[in-house]
Length: 246
Figure 1: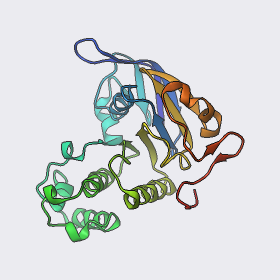
Figure 2: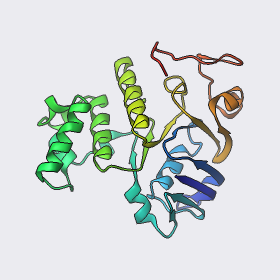
Figure 3: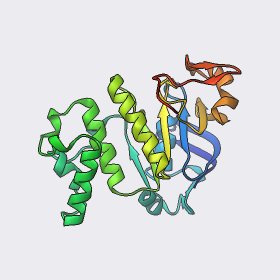
């Protein structure tokens, strides 16, 4: 589904963000992308989404590669950014979900169904500036899913959420995985989602440090600026932090 090959990226002005990153993500996987602040997580997700073009190397999503096919990559992926205010353009929940998608009967019905799924239907006509942080995040997530992407990229989706919000986000990740959606979730903190992920990717100062099943790499994450989850004990595995079944 996603193949990253010898990927380098530097921002205008020469600030290097990624160097020599290579990894593969199979269809339907739920991948945790972790690292300390400044390790390159958000940059890598933007490259996977086709929003940036590599300086060298490539990102291939479902047979389409960037550089060269950035538009095709963007058609297959949706990125939900950490700051919802940067991504919301509509004045109300309804307007934001339907913006640029038309108002056909089928589109409106699908948008309302997603709003119902995310407990946003009662806020359908509310101005977006009156929504809580968690509700804004859900509007962005609903808008991303409305486009039926093959890949969903979530940048720090648990940031700023309270405990009920975290449980709801975990449930959504489970539902998406059950539906076969490939998901990449970035975070600097493993605690609230490590028991859900199939593959753990650790970045350190723009380089790939670790990549594999969580049980194969968790003993080494602390050496790369990532705190191991309290639910992890070597030899015992990951225990779910909230009593849910993982």
